[in-house]
Image (tube, rainbow, N blue to C red):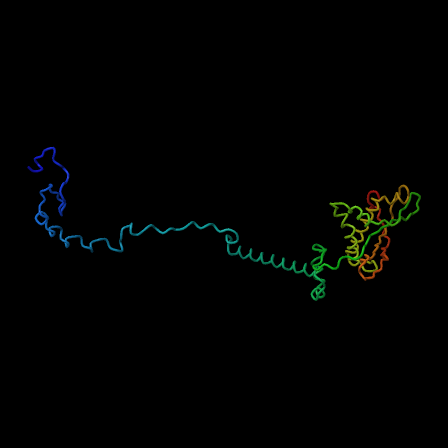
Amino acid sequence: MDAYDEGSNARHGPVGPVGPVGRSTPAGQGLPVAASAEPLDQGLPLDQGLPLDQGLPLDQGSPLDQGPPPDPGPPMAPRSGIAALSLPGQIVVVLALAVVAVGVCVHLGMTFLHVAPANTVTREHGKAVDDWIYPEFEQNWKLFAPNPLQQNISIQARAEVRDGEGGTVTTGWYDLSAEDGRAIDGNLLPSHTQQNELRRAWDFFLATHDTENRPVGLRGSLSETYLRRIVELRLGRDDAVRAATGGGGAVERVQVRSRTSNVPPPEWSREKVSTTPAYRELPWWRVPAAGAGEGVR
């Protein structure tokens, strides 16, 4: 009895070994390999396949062979700054920047020559340097600081006051620099006026006057007016009129002088200097009627 007579007990799957061409044989009834195998030459002949030359041409491959399209990259950012301008606009901007750069270099050079010690250039072109610096770019410092000041300079003033009876009285000398010194001493935040106003006014006067106290140029008259106005206000603040007359009156003229004394050298130094003060008195200046400050008249 073979496997086909076993009814429902028959196995439906392959039991025996698989032959060369994929057929299965019942267990125990396998055919000899040589008898059951189909000849190898019954397959499709090799020369009946698709010829190689009938495929797609190599230069017309499928889209898959061509790969993805090239990445165009990120979009170009719009140009900004000078690059966004047209060519004429770029030329104008470059020329303007060049002019500004040249102007800055010239100004720095003039400032350097102004604050530098005297040299061949300043002796030859000092007038041009001063014309460039004054008055807008005036500098109050030097490139190489000189020796520390070895003198004490105080500015003093007095007034000629007309009393109510028609007479005139001359006040004593008011040490204006000493007043500023007392205001600064112990003050953590002294004002610019207390520190520099009187000192700068005196330096301004000396720089615009000769040794005979005669003004040199238009700035000389300006420095006189500036210094006189400061003295008027200071005397008014000190109530010089009341101190001189004991009552009312008016300041008619003011006079300014400087007191210069050398700083004594230290005890261990062998240097010998004179400590006798030297005075420089300026001529009397008449006070205009409209120029007196509040409290002076």
